[in-house]
Image 1 (cartoon, helix red, strand yellow):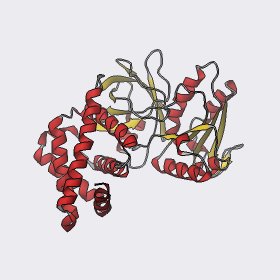
Image 2 (image 1 turned 30 degrees about the vertical axis):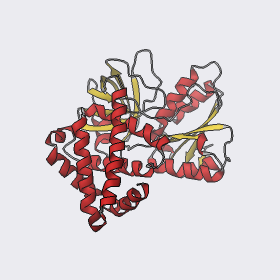
Image 3 (image 1 turned 180 degrees about the vertical axis):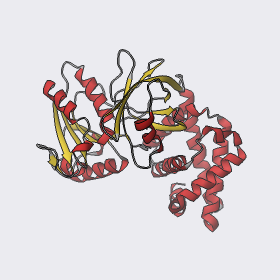
Length: 366
């Protein structure tokens, strides 16, 4: 089954946008009520759908990683009010799209492999959704919107009820400026006494949601916040020393971890590499240095590709982090763009860092 799925998927993957367009066309035809679950502009959604499909195909023979991912996906989909008949419609639309773009390579064996695989995927997702007794989403109010530059803003939201996240996790949010366009954000603070959550957002050129968040968020805006997800910092009660690798606003979940460690009587040693193209990308460098002055267990290492930070490193994050060796005895937490994460993980593995030392979450940034 694995070989049939991967071989057939390799045929349709180059036509990902066409496959996704046809999939949603079929889905909205056979289950028209699902159209209201999605935004008017489907470009980002199509990309996310195919990205999830790629992820599942890559992990199809690794149940140890696939099942937690699918359970988490099922919990996350509760915010869309997804019910059992929607899973059936999605399966029908997926097989129809694959059949159309595989042409003569769509055989009975291929159809059976995909049908069996989807039955497993849908079953695990529904198990994950059923096991979550908490709300599908939390309502909250924006209480702070502070622009640090023309591209980066700090947003603080006060949920009506506390959101039970752990430092390092991420949540999905929906805003009034971009309804039904959920965007993943990482809290930049550990759970606080007043329940407020801080988010760091960078506007990207074609980011429908990020541009709205940075430039058009208003105090008093009402947000919806989805269930916490992610496993960036699994060993949150452990004492191993840490290497943190943050690209741009990927700093946010690591900043939450630092906030948690600050509350300990004996925090582990932490080496933080904070990188970007230039000094302007290191939007919280001054605050981090002040934090490190108060807490000698933290070392802040600025990294810029143009070498524009005095006392910092020049180069890319993968180059600089691996120039220090394999970091034996450390856990490594990596956060940033999917491209940076892939490059850093690859380089670290080549350098000798073992896979069980490395932790990261990779999700769409817009």
